[in-house]
Image 1: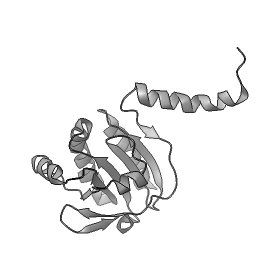
Image 2 (image 1 turned 180 degrees about the horizontal axis):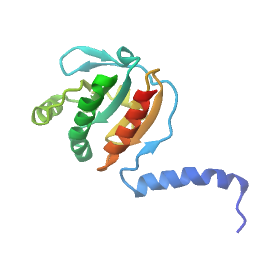
Image 3 (image 1 turned 90 degrees about the horizontal axis):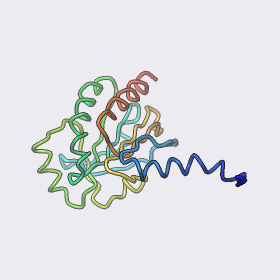
Image 4 (image 1 turned 180 degrees about the vertical axis):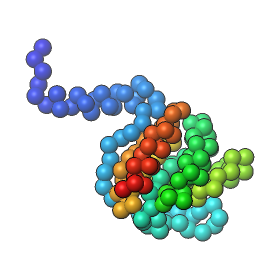
Length: 170
């Protein structure tokens, strides 16, 4: 069967799409562009905006308490935050649940020192085209999205660390 010209261009996209369905936890998506600014209520009752962190490397992690991989990933995120925050890195944990009560209760069991924000109407997750839980976005010092990860499997924290180090060095 002769292959049509357009089908060879679609093959990589089809493979990526099938991989994401057949291999749960598929990670990095190719992304670029300016990270959309947002403001959300933080756990301490204030409001935090992404733009406050311009000049820093920022990891935005979208998570929920009902998400097992989110719970598994959280201690690794805390370790990354502890290790790199003094070098111009911050992490914003964005909880996507309608009611923050579950998140508050779970964070009592698994305390973190990085800011936790609440996106109960999923406006920010929609802004960032979140398609899986958890989803992680890395933003460089100029405010550009450089890496995006969908899902989590053990070992992804090593990729995060490599990417954070590279962005800090820039």
